[in-house]
Length: 163
Image (cartoon, rainbow, N blue to C red; front, top):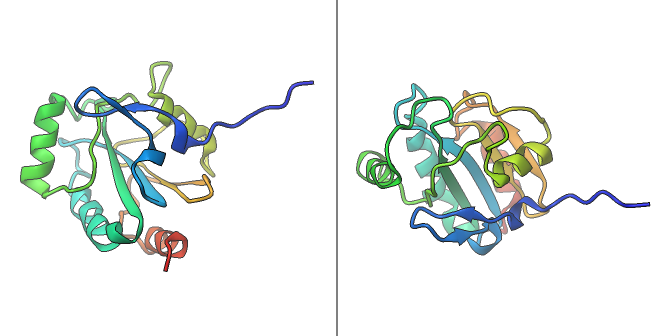
């Protein structure tokens, strides 16, 4: 008899913007908000709230983790162009990694695991879908239209950070 094992999403390697690899567990935070980014989307102003969350909670063990995706045809630029856009337009200080696919057979392994581990499973529906990874490895999922600073997200972050 074999026992099913679930991989901890914090231990899944992914590609960094400079071609290296990293894992959430190596980023040094307790709570992560993983989000698929797009610069040509009607939801792109969410960068502002994402950055504010990073500034507010970053020193307490929280990090926004951005993965650009052109899965919905709204992030056509190169990784370098995306990083420049994030920095110059939105003042992004949170880590932004290499472009990924979030759905389908070619989906990045971290996104496959996020979707499998989340409290609600299924395809990523659009840009700016949010996954909160808690210190226990539990994953909570929020729709693209839920703003990053929505009370249910802020309360979840605050409840899981060290005092």
